[in-house]
Amino acid sequence: MKSLNLVGSALLLGLAVVAGGCRAVAPPDSPSAPWTPPDWAGEEAARDPEAISLRPAADLSAPLTLAECADIALANNPATRRAWAAARAAAAGLGQAASLRYPRLTVSGEGTYQRQKYNLREEAPGLDADVDGFVYGPALELTYLLFDFGGVSGGIEEARQGLLAANYSFNRSIQDLLLEVGTAYYGLNSARSGLSAAEADVEDARTADQAAREKYQVGLVSKLDELQARSSYQDSLYRLETARGELETARAGLARALGFSPGPDFEIADPGEGIPSELSETDVAELIERGLRLRPDIAALRAGLRGREAALRAARSSLYPSLNLGGSANQLWYEYNSGPELYDDSYSYSGYLALKWDIFTGFSDRARARQAEAEREAAREDLAAAELDAAADVWNRYYAYNTAVRKYQFSRAYLETSRESYNLARDSYDNGLKSILDLLQSQSDLSTARSQLISAERDVFVALAELTYSTGTLTREGLAGAE
Image (tube, rainbow, N blue to C red; front, side, top):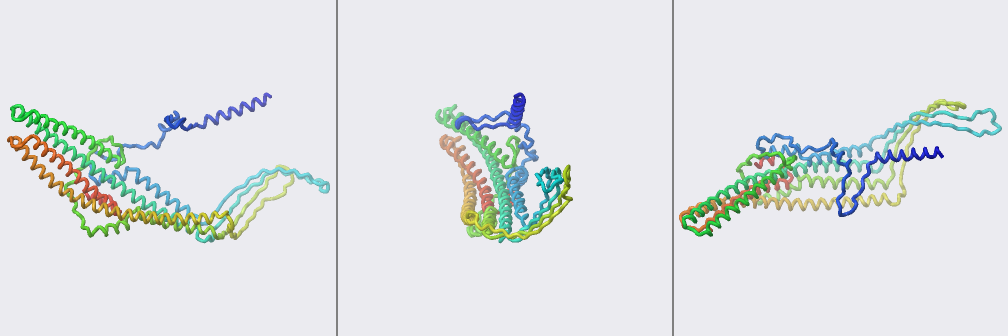
């Protein structure tokens, strides 16, 4: 009884040790209450050596050009590194598939303790049949697939096309990032210009407010004029705060594209005044053809289709036999503790040529071939749909760009006219020839013209980047050349 208690105590102690080393995690208690993480989860997170630093690995003391922003983003943003890791994983997958073309050599070792006792017949007296000893030794086995009706070659081609697709996807991820950087860069520049325009609007509204107040004090206008001018001034202050918030939001968007936290303050350089010109309408067909030929995402889908075709060949190969060449060799040593020494050391070797054919597998091989064929057809339709989408994308981006250029031209003319109208209205109001409503209306038109020009300038550069992106030709140099 005492020994039983000792055994039970030891068992409970063992269970306690196992339970203490296993940190249990329970699911949420209900679908409406948040789950509370255990304390050890927070401790592990605090000790995590792989914690990501969100501090910028770049010099932000000077204003950044678009080219510098592109360089920083390519060095810091995790999007391209993630795609790069996927491409390297695909390369390793190709190596695994190609390894089946080589012979497989396996080394093993055996060690056996053997104790045998025979009940001997009376006809064999005097023979000690107790065997007590060890048998041990190494073994070597070589196998080589000679022929399998395209299974290995199909798998290798599928992996090769998968690597091509991953590489094209990596290139597209770079273009994705460059487009994000360009859009965020011009968005920040537009927000900065918007803040300057809002400050100019405040100054114009303050001037009108002061003029109306002075006229009211000398009895030239009614109290209504002063109140209308004052409300316009207060509205300009409201829009100024909105512009400041939009500036910081745009700064955070560019910081994210650059791959760091929006905490550090940084500035961007003025992109300049050069506005690209319109494209001829005869260029759109060439641009569509270029997009279908050069876009990495389309090339990745084409590689994926070829990979599905290779996978179909590999699946069909399972319907046929495979031929293998093999051989083995082993060496054994014997050590006896007692009894007769039956054997000295021994060795053996063999070679074979084997034909393997799965005649019936529950139709799984045929189902696998049908699945691969259906996946190939799905990949074909995916490619066709992507090509249609790409052609439409180039078409839309082309006309969006030309529209943006024309809108920019009209917005410049609108700004010049609005500025002249505002100056004339202000002079006329000062001379008593115009009412406060005329001045405020011209002031509002000037504010609208400023905002419209800022948006139009941003839209031109963004539309150009998007058009280049849609044709698959967006590069770091091309993006920087848009400055």
